[in-house]
Image (cartoon, rainbow, N blue to C red; front, side, top):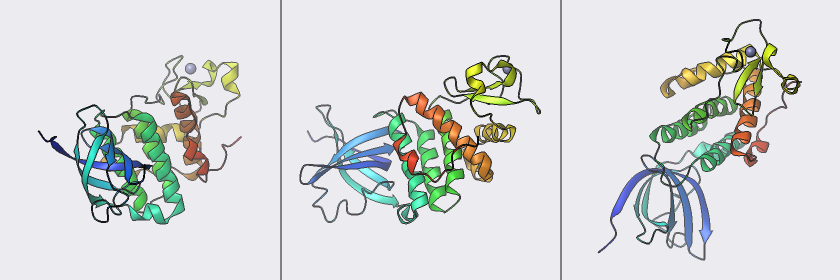
Length: 256
Ligand SMILES: [Zn+2]
């Protein structure tokens, strides 16, 4: 009996050689989540996969699940969106690469999540349209942490539970994923740079904004830098590893 063929809308997150003629493709699919497939003969095929298995391409795929529990077989793919600008403009490509690394870090095969799929497509479309790449990364990262269940707390001091108050100073605890007011900070946290009230309010606004209205929010360059630095440290701590592609971003060091 022939294996059943399935269809999915998918985004190419990774593609690497397997032997002389095959490719191993890591996809993130709507409904399914991450899916790793083998594309047999893809390196030789002139028709089936040419220009389709590029990083960041959105595809309509047909695939067959392996009966032995191995890799699924990628049977065919149609290109839906190629996000060409990402390949032509270095600042856009650099941010897209960070988005891709975060997706590979945070997802496992066959864990479906439509919201995460919509978010990553939103990020690539926004970048492809040439809008401020670092602002797009900050918006993506805040929503991404929410989607994977690690929303940092920017609403109240985690120790005294006092809501954010103008005039008060705050620091962000990367290990706890929360802000603390000056009165509650221990000595170790006092040595970390404070988080400005503007950045705190902006991050909260992004957390509360639905995806279809996210493009309305713009960090000032200073807030964007501050927000990205603290979210980067928090995310690295969460996954207990570096985000390797982060070092290619053109991002000034945090203010002293
Ligand atoms: Zn406090």
